[in-house]
Length: 269
Ligand SMILES: NC(=O)c1ccc[n+]([C@@H]2O[C@H](COP(=O)([O-])OP(=O)(O)OC[C@H]3O[C@@H](n4cnc5c(N)ncnc54)[C@H](OP(=O)(O)O)[C@@H]3O)[C@@H](O)[C@H]2O)c1
Image 1 (tube, rainbow, N blue to C red):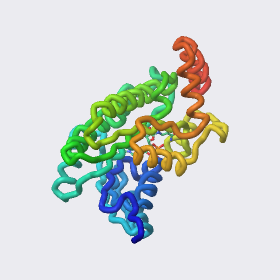
Image 2 (cartoon, rainbow, N blue to C red; image 1 turned 60 degrees about the vertical axis):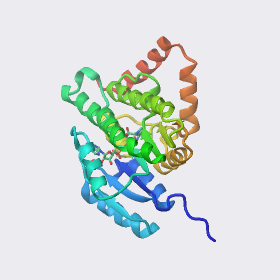
Image 3 (tube, rainbow, N blue to C red; image 1 turned 90 degrees about the vertical axis):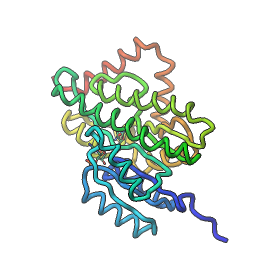
Image 4 (cartoon, rainbow, N blue to C red; image 1 turned 180 degrees about the horizontal axis):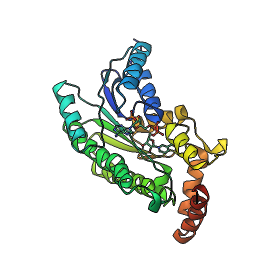
C-alpha cells in the first residue's frame, strides 16, 4: 500500500500566508498533504493562493482574512475555527512587520504597531491554539522569529526586540510542553527575498550583497522540516548560522559596537 503523506487528515493554520515566507510555508505543507487555513489581511491574495494550492495538491484550503494586530481578533479566529470544526494540528505564526530606521525618528505609534502584531498577536494565538493541542496530546507550532532575535540591532531596534521575545517565548514553551505531545519551534531566518526586505531596502537605499539574501522557498523548506521534527531553533543558511555562533563568542560591548557601526551605515542622516 502506498505510504500516506505526513499531513493526511491534518490541518495547518498559517498566519502571514498572503506573501513571502508564510506563502512559501503554505506550499510546503500543502505538498505534504496538509489541509490549510490561511490567515492575513489580504482576502483576495489568500483566496487565490488557497485555490491554487488546493488544485495543485488535492488538499482542502480555507481562508480567514483577519487583522491580527487588533486585540481580540486571535480569540475570534480561534472561536471561528471551533465553530467550523477545524481542529488545528499545526499552528504557524508567521505574520510580522518590520520598520527600519532610527528609533527617535519613527512615528511614535509605529513601535506599538510592531509590538501589537509581532508580540501580542503571536502570544494570543499561542494562548488560544496550544491548550487544545495539549488536551488532544498532539500538535506542532512554528513561530517565525529572525536572526535579529540573537543580538540588538541598531536601526531595527524595536523589530529586533520583538523577535528576541518570540525566540525566548518559544524556548521556554519548548521546555514547558515536554511530554505533552506538542512541539514548538522557532524559525530564525536571515535576510530573505520578500516584500518586507524590498520595502526596507527601498526606503533606506541600502544595497544588499546577493550572498546575504536567502531564497524564500529554501527558508520555508528548512522551517517546515524543523517544525515536523520538533527542532526548537532553526537558523537557515550557513552564513546566518556562522554569524550567530560568532556573535555568541563575542563580548556584548563589542557586538554592540559592530551592530551599531553597521546599523548607523544603513540609516539616512
Ligand atoms: N524577509 C526577511 O528577511 C525576514 C527575516 C527574518 C524574519 N522574517 C519574518 O518572517 C515573517 C514573514 O515576513 P516576510 O518576509 O515573508 O514578509 P511579507 O511578505 O511582508 O509577509 C508578511 C505577512 O504578514 C501579514 N500581515 C502583516 N500585517 C498583518 C496583520 N495586521 N494581520 C495579519 N497579517 C498581517 C502580511 O499579509 P497582509 O498584508 O495581507 O495582512 C503578510 O502575509 C515575519 O514575521 C518577519 O518578521 C523575515
